[in-house]
Image (cartoon, rainbow, N blue to C red):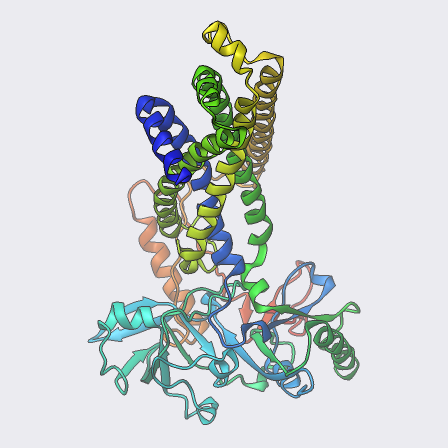
Length: 537
């Protein structure tokens, strides 16, 4: 009963002073809302489990060549088979190849060509990931053989957006990259293969890859996903993999010339989060500081309001209200304010999350999992209640210590709260200023770093220079002569455009890289076909 009385008194006080209530709620809403928004991002990107069965057993395998710096090198078909043979470590190993510069994904319908994003995967890929199809099936083992690979599995979003969620899509034939493929399955809505590796992206469909071992052990173009065997820890797998890597280096010295060669095993969840872990944690701390500043600001307002209510508190105390009742009244008021601020904060968080998903700054991985759900609502409510309790206790304790006789005798005139109250208010103000200065310094350092990045001399004149990219599918332009001829045709047309002073073409794929090898010539020396670097992805 006392609680409802305190609530009614608090609401009556807010009605008498709506300006104070509005300012306090708005201030708290900004601080709590920022925390709710960023927490939803942290939860979706870093904390949410991957939508795969026993996802904690999924590992990402990559080669390390210290001579190539920090590059993360994929695996070759031979190496993938080596790892599949390590049954004591891995239950199975699958591969995915999604490098866009090597595969232009086209869908041809009624003579019209549409460009989408696709990926090559080994026939066992979906089994290793532990995800079945929503409609139909995934690939069969026998479909991983050349000549028996005319099948395709569609992503749920692609199926809905391009084919209107046609339930009869199974069995239909699609012309993808010039090949006639049969649709055998549609994956669930939350399945994706954006694994945060080089050139990976959301795929609209997946086709079977039969990794030919004719490319050689150095043709490391696959991203390998492994599922740990039962009972095997990450540490055990890494130790065993390091031993296997040394054996491979001894058995195939030409393919592993770097003395520091090794193999790295990363949990897939950590791999997908990638470099976003530290920035998101820093951002979480930053919005936490913003919340502290907001709370201190509202706390200062509550202290001032408590001083203006000294006569009211004295009268209540004279009528029999104890110190506990006075503190409870102030806590009730502050909790009501923070709960109202939390409600407004949730509305702001909904808008903030929607904006983040549309803009996706920094290409956040797993952005589709960033949403306001029950956990985020619970986090926001907990923050609001905790802040309310803390903010209500300090002015409540101060009010409970009011000298009743002095206040009633003086009629409340000239009451300033004494030295003690002034010290508390000064502490709040100093804390606000210190935190604000900390944020300003951090922002200044960030702007300074950004300015330094923008001022880097690129070694070229970028003013009035435009660039464009056009891709020539290798299944349409299989010969280098066709590619060069097409480039010359495009260049000639660009040079005829008005206001174009000069133009050139840079061949990113041809002729620098041919047949899986990187070719280069040294000025003044005869061309040596053997002077090549291994293909590393």
